Image (cartoon, rainbow, N blue to C red; front, side):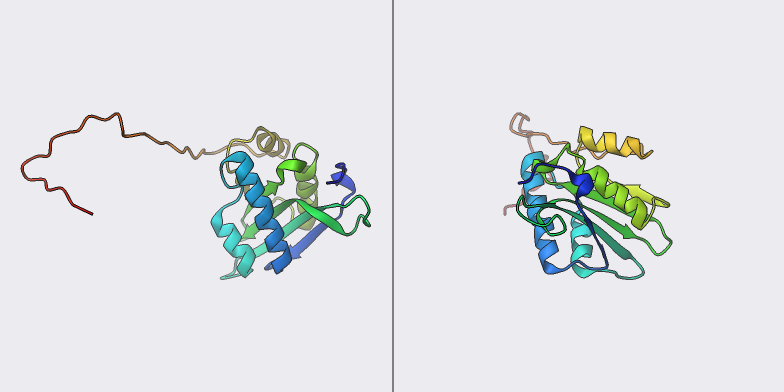
Length: 176
């Protein structure tokens, strides 16, 4: 891993489906992020779209930021530090999702990606999804004028403590 100076790292901009190596790098990053955070960083549908590319008037824009190896040319990255994906609808509105490798968080990676996104596409009609409650993601969103409009809560209840209710005479228990 390289000391972080992401503002100097080149951002790879890909329109349409991503190549197999970038897709593998994204999946590896997502696995590390999910292990660290306990929930996925991007939606499964976005991953499917990354694999298949544009479809039914939807267009895909992926920005990848590789951290250069200490001994490599800065233009050739080694580790995928983060990536941003925009899936645009036919009407021009789009959805943005960003994932940053846990080893590169709080070092400006997402800021670099958002800056490159502003140049490549702009923010018109763009909604951003944050999966999980990450303080850094909320701060980044606020810097660019985004505010939460809804939250997804995962609610669970253990049932071991519930009393066993007797079945009514008209209810039958279904055996598996």
